[in-house]
Length: 184
Figure 1 (tube, helix red, strand yellow):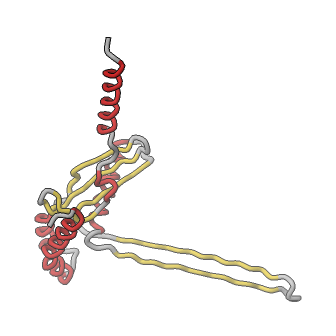
Figure 2: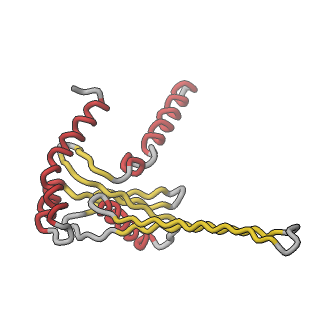
C-alpha cells in the first residue's frame, strides 16, 4: 500500500498537470489584433470572436470572418460619428407649470473595405465556459508587400506611404519589444 506522502505527492502532481494543461486561453486571445514579430516572422494578426452561437461550424466561420475584418481594419477604416442632443422646456400660460423634455442620440458607423489576399487562419480556441469561439488570422509581412503592390482599393498615396514606412515601423516595433523584454 502507498504511503500518505506518496499519495499526496501524486495528487498534487496530477493537479499541477491539470492546471498546466487547462492553463486558459492562448496569449493571442487577450493580446488582440495587431502587428507582431514572432519567431522572426513579421506579420499582421487579426483576432475574431463570437459567443452565443450553438451551431459550431457557423460559429467558427463567423469568428474567422471577424478576425479577417479586424486585420483589414489595421489598413484602413472610415469612422463617422454623430451625436444629436435636444432639450426643451415649455411653460404653460400662468407660468406655474412647465414641461421638460430631452433626447440624446449617438450613432457611430465604422466601414472598412479592402481585399487582402493571403490572410489565413493560423489558430483557433474555444472557451468552453463562456461558449466563445476565437480565431487568429495572419497576413505575413512579405505577402502584405505583394498585396499592397497589387491593391487597387488603396490610393497611390496610401500605397506608397505603407511601402516606404513598413520596414521602419517593424524596426521600431522590434526596438520597443526589446525594451519591454529588457534585452539590448
